[in-house]
Image (cartoon, rainbow, N blue to C red):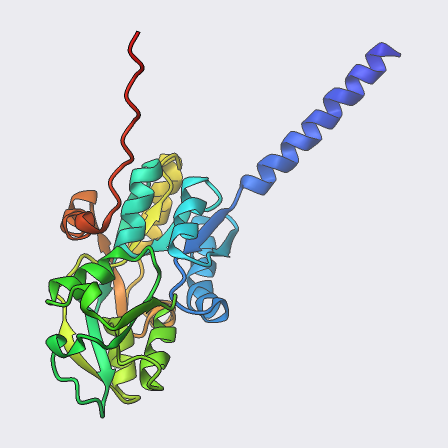
Length: 285
């Protein structure tokens, strides 16, 4: 009887282990929250399906409600690969050794800009005129946005007020309706909303682009397959172009990148990061 029970236990453990392995045999793609979940799903699902076909393993999408949540998911191993802003990547890099896989190309360029926008009919013509005005920012953790506003000559304390609205589309709509006098947008979103009544009054210097990163402990075979699949996407292929345009109308491919490419962002956001808490002094004997 003991032998039979032992065999049953061993069989049960084998089934559990097999099920666990099967559950892990997939690629989970995460993303920062740049739009409402339904829109992000439409943008990213074609890429998820493409990665499943190219790598030969199932893939699924796991959306995050905020920049910090996307970082935590990658750092905790809940996602294997993630579409991240430069700041989100640096946070994931610091938290868990996340690695940059490829960078996005926008209209053939390996960089992007942040733009300060106002309504087309606004009397505001320059950043200096934002003093005392209502300003819309995105995610509280998006330090690069604050760095660009301050770098343009407008300390946040000189604004009348500033609020964090989360998604870029939220910012654009809030400025468009007059709820806020101005806001900051990613270049592709700003250009889209220029057609809907917004006007750009400031453009940042070129910044390292959004990045596809992988968790630090992902095996090298999987990393190589994912990198190869992403770099194989070509705008000259109609099916590939549809995947890229779903992600962003102005994206046209991926290119190799490195951690060092994001050092400029590290320098820009450094003044806006909270200093590490000092350790209490050791008690004297």
